[in-house]
Length: 289
Image 1 (cartoon, one colour):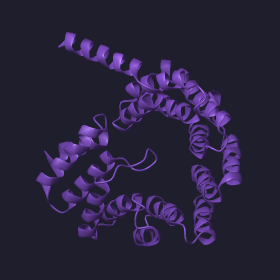
Image 2 (tube, rainbow, N blue to C red):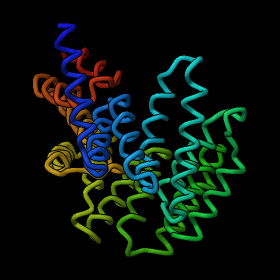
Image 3 (cartoon, rainbow, N blue to C red):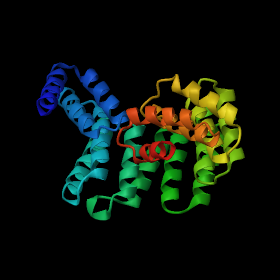
Protein backbone atom coordinates (compact mmCIF):
# COMPACT_ATOMS: atom_id res chain seq x y z
CA UNK A 1 0.00 0.00 0.00
CA UNK A 2 2.82 2.40 0.89
CA UNK A 3 4.42 1.80 -2.52
CA UNK A 4 1.10 2.49 -4.25
CA UNK A 5 0.73 5.80 -2.39
CA UNK A 6 4.28 6.85 -3.32
CA UNK A 7 3.68 5.93 -6.97
CA UNK A 8 0.41 7.89 -6.96
CA UNK A 9 2.09 10.99 -5.54
CA UNK A 10 4.88 10.73 -8.10
CA UNK A 11 2.41 10.41 -10.97
CA UNK A 12 0.50 13.44 -9.70
CA UNK A 13 3.76 15.43 -9.53
CA UNK A 14 4.61 14.45 -13.10
CA UNK A 15 1.16 15.48 -14.34
CA UNK A 16 1.39 18.84 -12.57
CA UNK A 17 4.89 19.45 -13.90
CA UNK A 18 3.67 18.96 -17.48
CA UNK A 19 0.51 21.03 -17.11
CA UNK A 20 -0.08 24.58 -18.35
CA UNK A 21 -0.85 27.40 -15.92
CA UNK A 22 -4.63 27.28 -16.62
CA UNK A 23 -4.59 23.50 -16.15
CA UNK A 24 -2.73 23.88 -12.87
CA UNK A 25 -5.21 26.49 -11.69
CA UNK A 26 -8.12 24.22 -12.63
CA UNK A 27 -6.51 21.37 -10.68
CA UNK A 28 -6.09 23.70 -7.72
CA UNK A 29 -9.72 24.79 -7.92
CA UNK A 30 -10.90 21.18 -8.00
CA UNK A 31 -8.69 20.26 -5.05
CA UNK A 32 -9.87 23.23 -3.00
CA UNK A 33 -13.53 22.45 -3.69
CA UNK A 34 -13.08 18.87 -2.47
CA UNK A 35 -11.29 20.09 0.66
CA UNK A 36 -7.74 19.05 -0.25
CA UNK A 37 -5.91 22.27 0.55
CA UNK A 38 -2.46 20.63 0.35
CA UNK A 39 -3.03 19.53 -3.25
CA UNK A 40 -4.60 22.91 -4.03
CA UNK A 41 -1.59 24.80 -2.70
CA UNK A 42 0.81 22.58 -4.67
CA UNK A 43 -1.10 23.20 -7.90
CA UNK A 44 -1.50 26.95 -7.35
CA UNK A 45 2.18 27.33 -6.45
CA UNK A 46 3.08 25.84 -9.83
CA UNK A 47 0.49 28.02 -11.57
CA UNK A 48 1.98 31.13 -9.95
CA UNK A 49 5.50 30.04 -10.90
CA UNK A 50 4.34 29.58 -14.49
CA UNK A 51 2.40 32.86 -14.66
CA UNK A 52 3.62 35.10 -11.81
CA UNK A 53 1.65 38.16 -12.92
CA UNK A 54 -1.75 36.48 -12.84
CA UNK A 55 -3.62 38.10 -9.95
CA UNK A 56 -6.26 35.38 -9.65
CA UNK A 57 -3.64 32.66 -9.27
CA UNK A 58 -2.14 34.58 -6.35
CA UNK A 59 -5.61 35.00 -4.85
CA UNK A 60 -6.36 31.28 -5.05
CA UNK A 61 -2.94 30.37 -3.66
CA UNK A 62 -3.75 32.66 -0.73
CA UNK A 63 -7.09 30.88 -0.26
CA UNK A 64 -5.30 27.52 -0.15
CA UNK A 65 -2.75 28.81 2.37
CA UNK A 66 -5.57 30.28 4.45
CA UNK A 67 -7.38 26.95 4.53
CA UNK A 68 -4.17 25.21 5.60
CA UNK A 69 -3.57 27.84 8.29
CA UNK A 70 -6.96 27.14 9.87
CA UNK A 71 -5.99 23.50 10.41
CA UNK A 72 -2.30 24.00 11.18
CA UNK A 73 -0.48 23.66 14.48
CA UNK A 74 0.43 26.80 16.38
CA UNK A 75 4.00 26.36 15.15
CA UNK A 76 2.94 26.45 11.48
CA UNK A 77 -0.06 28.78 11.70
CA UNK A 78 1.84 32.08 11.77
CA UNK A 79 3.93 31.26 8.72
CA UNK A 80 0.92 30.16 6.70
CA UNK A 81 -1.05 33.23 7.77
CA UNK A 82 1.80 35.46 6.60
CA UNK A 83 1.87 33.70 3.23
CA UNK A 84 -1.92 34.03 2.96
CA UNK A 85 -1.77 37.78 3.51
CA UNK A 86 1.13 38.20 1.10
CA UNK A 87 -0.69 36.37 -1.69
CA UNK A 88 -3.88 38.41 -1.22
CA UNK A 89 -1.90 41.65 -1.20
CA UNK A 90 0.05 40.59 -4.29
CA UNK A 91 -3.23 39.83 -6.09
CA UNK A 92 -4.53 43.32 -5.32
CA UNK A 93 -1.22 44.86 -6.37
CA UNK A 94 -1.38 43.07 -9.72
CA UNK A 95 -5.07 43.84 -10.31
CA UNK A 96 -6.53 46.59 -8.11
CA UNK A 97 -9.96 45.91 -9.62
CA UNK A 98 -10.06 42.25 -8.55
CA UNK A 99 -12.92 42.53 -6.05
CA UNK A 100 -12.59 38.93 -4.86
CA UNK A 101 -9.02 39.59 -3.73
CA UNK A 102 -10.06 42.67 -1.78
CA UNK A 103 -12.92 40.70 -0.18
CA UNK A 104 -10.43 38.02 0.87
CA UNK A 105 -8.19 40.71 2.35
CA UNK A 106 -11.16 42.02 4.33
CA UNK A 107 -11.75 38.56 5.78
CA UNK A 108 -8.06 38.26 6.63
CA UNK A 109 -7.91 41.65 8.33
CA UNK A 110 -11.07 40.91 10.32
CA UNK A 111 -10.16 37.47 11.60
CA UNK A 112 -6.37 37.53 11.92
CA UNK A 113 -4.99 38.71 15.27
CA UNK A 114 -3.18 42.02 15.32
CA UNK A 115 0.30 40.50 15.51
CA UNK A 116 -0.46 38.65 12.24
CA UNK A 117 -1.63 41.80 10.49
CA UNK A 118 -5.30 41.83 11.44
CA UNK A 119 -6.90 45.27 11.51
CA UNK A 120 -10.51 46.49 11.36
CA UNK A 121 -9.21 49.82 10.07
CA UNK A 122 -7.53 48.09 7.12
CA UNK A 123 -10.69 46.05 6.49
CA UNK A 124 -12.74 49.25 6.29
CA UNK A 125 -10.17 50.76 3.93
CA UNK A 126 -10.54 47.77 1.60
CA UNK A 127 -14.33 48.08 1.75
CA UNK A 128 -13.94 51.71 0.71
CA UNK A 129 -11.74 50.71 -2.23
CA UNK A 130 -14.34 48.15 -3.30
CA UNK A 131 -17.11 50.74 -3.12
CA UNK A 132 -15.13 53.01 -5.47
CA UNK A 133 -15.16 50.22 -8.04
CA UNK A 134 -18.56 48.57 -7.54
CA UNK A 135 -21.40 50.03 -5.47
CA UNK A 136 -23.15 46.70 -4.89
CA UNK A 137 -20.02 44.88 -3.78
CA UNK A 138 -19.19 47.91 -1.66
CA UNK A 139 -22.42 47.46 0.29
CA UNK A 140 -21.59 43.76 0.69
CA UNK A 141 -18.08 44.54 1.90
CA UNK A 142 -19.17 47.13 4.48
CA UNK A 143 -21.94 44.81 5.70
CA UNK A 144 -19.31 42.12 6.31
CA UNK A 145 -17.20 44.49 8.39
CA UNK A 146 -20.17 45.82 10.39
CA UNK A 147 -21.38 42.31 11.20
CA UNK A 148 -17.93 41.48 12.51
CA UNK A 149 -18.10 44.63 14.64
CA UNK A 150 -21.46 43.39 16.01
CA UNK A 151 -23.39 46.21 14.33
CA UNK A 152 -26.19 44.20 12.66
CA UNK A 153 -28.49 47.19 12.15
CA UNK A 154 -25.79 49.11 10.26
CA UNK A 155 -24.92 45.98 8.27
CA UNK A 156 -28.59 45.42 7.41
CA UNK A 157 -28.89 49.00 6.17
CA UNK A 158 -26.05 48.35 3.73
CA UNK A 159 -27.74 45.37 2.06
CA UNK A 160 -31.19 47.02 2.12
CA UNK A 161 -29.69 50.12 0.49
CA UNK A 162 -28.15 47.89 -2.17
CA UNK A 163 -31.61 46.68 -3.21
CA UNK A 164 -33.06 50.20 -3.07
CA UNK A 165 -30.30 51.47 -5.33
CA UNK A 166 -30.42 48.51 -7.72
CA UNK A 167 -33.93 47.02 -7.53
CA UNK A 168 -33.44 45.21 -10.85
CA UNK A 169 -30.30 43.41 -9.70
CA UNK A 170 -30.74 39.69 -8.96
CA UNK A 171 -27.45 39.76 -7.06
CA UNK A 172 -28.63 42.58 -4.79
CA UNK A 173 -31.79 40.67 -3.85
CA UNK A 174 -29.74 37.52 -3.33
CA UNK A 175 -27.31 39.28 -0.99
CA UNK A 176 -30.19 40.72 1.04
CA UNK A 177 -31.83 37.29 1.14
CA UNK A 178 -28.69 35.64 2.49
CA UNK A 179 -28.42 38.33 5.17
CA UNK A 180 -32.05 37.93 6.23
CA UNK A 181 -31.66 34.15 6.39
CA UNK A 182 -28.25 33.90 8.04
CA UNK A 183 -28.35 36.86 10.40
CA UNK A 184 -32.03 37.63 11.08
CA UNK A 185 -33.50 34.10 10.74
CA UNK A 186 -36.22 35.82 8.71
CA UNK A 187 -37.24 32.84 6.62
CA UNK A 188 -40.19 34.44 4.81
CA UNK A 189 -38.29 37.65 4.09
CA UNK A 190 -35.28 35.79 2.74
CA UNK A 191 -37.45 33.55 0.55
CA UNK A 192 -39.09 36.65 -0.93
CA UNK A 193 -35.67 38.03 -1.87
CA UNK A 194 -34.55 34.74 -3.45
CA UNK A 195 -37.81 34.65 -5.41
CA UNK A 196 -37.19 38.21 -6.56
CA UNK A 197 -33.68 37.26 -7.68
CA UNK A 198 -35.06 34.43 -9.81
CA UNK A 199 -37.86 36.59 -11.17
CA UNK A 200 -35.23 39.04 -12.39
CA UNK A 201 -32.85 36.32 -13.58
CA UNK A 202 -34.18 32.74 -13.75
CA UNK A 203 -30.60 31.53 -14.30
CA UNK A 204 -29.25 33.01 -11.06
CA UNK A 205 -28.43 29.54 -9.76
CA UNK A 206 -27.21 30.28 -6.20
CA UNK A 207 -30.76 31.38 -5.37
CA UNK A 208 -31.96 27.80 -5.93
CA UNK A 209 -29.43 26.54 -3.40
CA UNK A 210 -30.56 29.12 -0.84
CA UNK A 211 -34.24 28.30 -1.37
CA UNK A 212 -33.43 24.72 -0.39
CA UNK A 213 -31.35 25.78 2.60
CA UNK A 214 -33.99 28.27 3.69
CA UNK A 215 -36.74 25.62 3.61
CA UNK A 216 -34.73 23.27 5.84
CA UNK A 217 -34.28 26.06 8.38
CA UNK A 218 -37.91 27.17 8.14
CA UNK A 219 -39.19 23.57 8.11
CA UNK A 220 -41.61 24.30 5.28
CA UNK A 221 -41.92 24.13 1.47
CA UNK A 222 -40.09 20.80 1.36
CA UNK A 223 -41.23 19.81 -2.15
CA UNK A 224 -40.03 23.07 -3.65
CA UNK A 225 -36.81 22.84 -1.65
CA UNK A 226 -35.99 19.41 -3.06
CA UNK A 227 -36.73 20.58 -6.60
CA UNK A 228 -34.51 23.63 -6.11
CA UNK A 229 -31.58 21.69 -4.65
CA UNK A 230 -31.72 19.07 -7.39
CA UNK A 231 -31.75 21.84 -9.98
CA UNK A 232 -28.64 23.29 -8.35
CA UNK A 233 -26.97 19.87 -8.27
CA UNK A 234 -27.29 19.72 -12.07
CA UNK A 235 -25.26 22.94 -12.28
CA UNK A 236 -21.50 23.51 -12.08
CA UNK A 237 -20.95 26.27 -9.48
CA UNK A 238 -18.31 28.95 -9.75
CA UNK A 239 -15.66 29.13 -7.03
CA UNK A 240 -17.53 31.90 -5.19
CA UNK A 241 -20.85 30.01 -5.22
CA UNK A 242 -22.02 27.26 -2.84
CA UNK A 243 -20.27 24.03 -3.80
CA UNK A 244 -21.96 20.76 -4.69
CA UNK A 245 -20.86 19.11 -1.45
CA UNK A 246 -22.93 21.71 0.40
CA UNK A 247 -25.89 21.11 -1.91
CA UNK A 248 -25.78 17.36 -1.24
CA UNK A 249 -25.49 18.06 2.49
CA UNK A 250 -28.56 20.31 2.51
CA UNK A 251 -30.50 17.83 0.40
CA UNK A 252 -29.63 15.23 3.02
CA UNK A 253 -30.81 17.56 5.78
CA UNK A 254 -34.05 18.06 3.89
CA UNK A 255 -34.58 14.33 3.37
CA UNK A 256 -33.82 13.70 7.02
CA UNK A 257 -36.52 16.17 8.05
CA UNK A 258 -38.92 14.48 5.62
CA UNK A 259 -38.26 11.13 7.30
CA UNK A 260 -36.40 9.73 4.29
CA UNK A 261 -33.48 8.33 6.24
CA UNK A 262 -32.12 6.03 3.53
CA UNK A 263 -32.16 8.81 0.94
CA UNK A 264 -30.54 11.20 3.40
CA UNK A 265 -27.76 8.67 3.97
CA UNK A 266 -27.12 8.52 0.22
CA UNK A 267 -27.01 12.31 -0.07
CA UNK A 268 -24.65 12.67 2.88
CA UNK A 269 -22.46 9.98 1.33
CA UNK A 270 -22.23 11.97 -1.90
CA UNK A 271 -21.41 15.10 0.09
CA UNK A 272 -18.64 13.25 1.93
CA UNK A 273 -17.18 11.97 -1.33
CA UNK A 274 -16.82 15.58 -2.47
CA UNK A 275 -15.68 16.94 0.91
CA UNK A 276 -14.01 14.05 2.77
CA UNK A 277 -12.69 16.27 5.57
CA UNK A 278 -16.06 17.83 6.47
CA UNK A 279 -16.82 17.18 10.14
CA UNK A 280 -20.35 18.47 9.59
CA UNK A 281 -21.06 15.90 6.88
CA UNK A 282 -19.43 13.08 8.86
CA UNK A 283 -21.62 13.89 11.85
CA UNK A 284 -24.75 13.94 9.68
CA UNK A 285 -23.86 10.62 8.06
CA UNK A 286 -23.29 9.03 11.44
CA UNK A 287 -26.67 10.34 12.57
CA UNK A 288 -28.55 8.42 9.85
CA UNK A 289 -26.37 5.30 9.79
